[in-house]
Length: 411
Image 1 (spheres, rainbow, N blue to C red):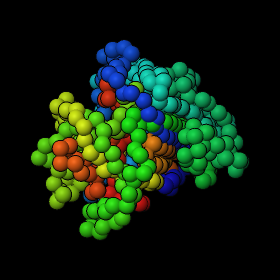
Image 2 (image 1 turned 45 degrees about the vertical axis):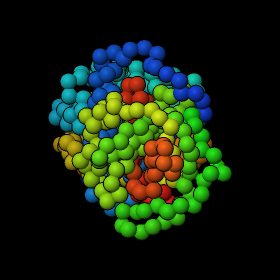
Image 3 (image 1 turned 120 degrees about the horizontal axis):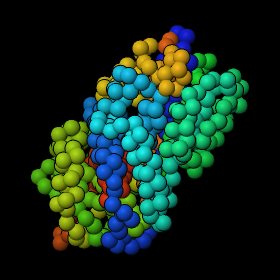
């Protein structure tokens, strides 16, 4: 949603993500090199931001399904950070959990993390793209432009925002970068909009252990509101890493060579609401414990096929998380244009997810706008026939690419 402005230009950030999957032996894959101190700090900040953003959106929400890409959101806001000054900078930096890092460290960390993730696994297609779209004639500070080009590999284009064709140009870029999974992020360009910053991520990798379509049958899925729905439930017996205690059950399903995985988490008790798990049990400390204490065995898993779309304005959640000034007339984005008079108009996130026997396919778009101030008994069983949490991550660094809750597979 575009906020009403008085007489200020606008900047919008769009983040796009897409994923699918692939089948191979996971082996004992490791990162090709040790992460630097700065990279570790960036990843830790991203993980912390991921959990906080997810909780902000998921807990207490009326929406049955929530699916976001924290990587996309944080990278788009990381680009925006280069244009911020003063308290505006401090609030965005703090919201992204980047407290003790300088801007050069943040930029260098994002750059090397982008390179690491996209070159990590030859059996997985992982792409990250960034772009700057500015209104024709709008003066952009050279340092801002060069930082986004040098550290984020951002493509830069100047468009006539008064020409309706500019909408198609931007949406075509979105479609290309998400491999057709998200076709539109902009319906029209408001008169005050001066810039779009767009981040796109695409992930494609098959399950290491694919599900047999012949074993997919119609089974019950128990929704939080008490309704019972018939869904297509995939099933298989496979070797997997898992963790289980009195509160949660978690299983890890790998892609490619095993560095990228999907973690599926559900309450142990059928009477525990999924929001209770998210609010009480889901934390960085607990994730590290669950991953650190997991074991490997042959398990039976039942997982619903699903296809869902999710769209959300992130303005209010980001304000709640600590960066309110960026959306007001007091915002300082003078590192984009020295005359200032800019604020974030819109932060919009749009995602798509498809999960089937072959693997996972997902896409996400986040837009931020800145404007002028104005069953076998011998095996452990993981039956995801109730609401659950999913985390798509790179397991060695811990980078969270996607995180979501599923309460209605037939959404």
